Structures are given as structure tokens and as C-alpha cells.
Image (cartoon, rainbow, N blue to C red):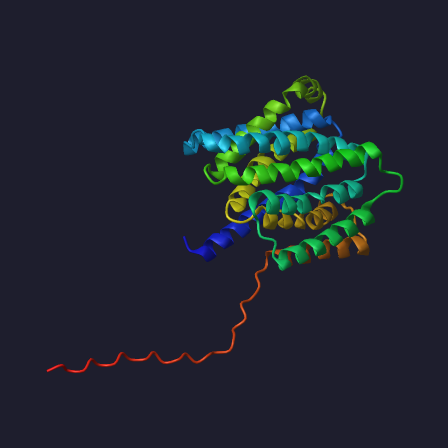
Length: 313
């Protein structure tokens, strides 16, 4: 496939991912009023695993190769399981701004771990873009932070979520070298669901009393921000570095601000809008490529002709 076409497809997949992950924050806010953190995570993962399982059967994907299972298992435990539970719990302890601030340490950790464990390059444009985006995330977080809305427990939980997110991404990258994005996502989701099975009693109990809108939001989280978005993420991650993909997720805070404005009527202030613009600008810088400067044309020395051999007669 043409390298340019591959790059465009990967960028399109990454765009689908960040849009759906941004929409997840709005749905989590709604579903979280009726479901506890563990039950919400389990319901989301079961919905996602069911959707992915049907697609795998239709496409006859089969089981991933043996060498991919280690990465799938680690990413399933850390990212699909642990991350979702502690993030849901953390957002009940702190306001949205503080949660966004702490969780956005994740892309920085991905870059550091990717460079250390995967040998990812750290070009200056990537570092500059991440710095700009992180400044934007800090601005968005500070503008949305409520006074007195934070707790030490909530901050620690969001920090653990960021660490689990980074570890899951770095573990997933090698698995994509031998398994397809759909296989890695499907079986990672299944591993996460198994990790969350202790919350099955809570899920059954809360589902019997939850309003239909909360349950529909939980199913939406499983089918779209989990099944679809994690698959498009894996597709894009297989075609670029973990560091660049991590930097792309800095677009999420800006999209969350926009979606909250449109869906919930939460009008952002000027500081929030400025922070969102910084996030998007940083992503654009981090994903851009340096132009190759055309150097001066140098004259090439003429190739000397071999001398004719003299006739020996």
C-alpha cells in the first residue's frame, strides 16, 4: 500500500478514536449517576466484548498468535480493566478539571516508556507539540476546577489511571506486530471484563434500578468508545509510534469542552477555549513532519575515463 495512503488511514483512525473517547466523558457523567465505578466498567466491557466478538466471528479472525498474548494480557489488565475502574472512581472524588489535569500525564508517560522500552524516536517537533498540548490541558483543567472539589484519594486514583493507561499502550504496541488490531482489541477487552467480574453482583443489582438512559449510555460506552475506538486506536498504533499516538490524545480535552457545550449546555469560558485551542495546536505540531530543506546544488566531479590500453605489437 502507498505509504501516503497508509499515513492518511492511520490519521483517520486516530481521529475517530479521539472523537469517540471525548464523547465517553459525557456518557460517563450520565451513566455514573446510576452505576458504581466497577459496575459501570464491567457493563461497558461486556457490551464492548459482545460487539467485538460478533465482528470477529463474522470476519473469522480466530485466536491471536502465541507471541501476542503477553501484550494483550498486560494491556487488558492495565488499560481495559484497572484503568476504567480507577478512572470512574477517581472522577467521583474530584472535579472534572482536576481529573483531566492528572490523567493527561498519561501521554507524557507513554513517550518516556516508549523511548525507554520500545526505542521510539523523540523528535523535537513531538516534544514541542506535547509541551504545547500539556500546557493547554493544564489551562483547561484549571479553568474547570471547582474550589474544594479535590481529594487526595481522587488525585491518587487519577494518577494510577494515567500510569495504567501508559503501561497498557506500551504493552499493546508489540502485540500488534503479530496480531491484528481487531484481535488485540477483542481479547484485551475480554481480559478486562474478566478482571472486572468481581463487580458482577453490583452490576446486576444496579441495572435493575437504573433508568433506561443510564443503561443505554453504558451500552454506548461499550460499543463505540470501547469496541470501535479501541480498534481504530490499535489500527493507528500499529502504523506509528506509541509516543505520537499518545500525543494525539491531547485533542480529547478540547473536544470534551466542545461536546459539553453542545450536549449539556455548559458554556466554556475564554480560558477554557484558549486551553482547548492550545491542545489542538500542540497535536498539530506533534504530528507534523519537518520539511527537508533543499541544500545548494553541488557540482559533481566528472568521472575520469579509463585510459585506452596501448597496442602491444
